[in-house]
Length: 147
Ligand code: DQA
Image (tube, rainbow, N blue to C red; front, side, top):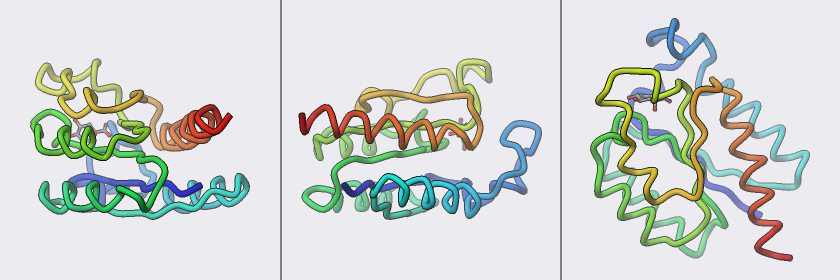
């Protein structure tokens, strides 16, 4: 079982940016935690972060035939990117969208996720732990699909 974890713009700044919203965990720490949880479950993860919309679209397209599912935090592009939504729809595999903060508790412009329309499910507001929830959800979904 192989999963792509795709992180959008400014998530490389976790641990530094707006700590009152995103906490002090770094992206590297999130990925290390995910990596060890994945190993325990016999899952392989490929990590990717970009601040560029087109690179994220390219990365999603590469997922076709190479991974079984995608966990993505499109960050600010969640609220703007029809291109990322379309790419997720095109690859047609289980997708979990994760947000560290609860986007529904924040500014109005964050309360709509365009990209989530192409996701199987959405996890929002559980901090860095949301990625762990995402991993468990994906393993469950893939096992159900196999059964
Ligand atoms: C975010 C929420 C977005 O609104 C914001 O632009 C981000 C991070 C989150 O994980 O809470 O960069 O996706």
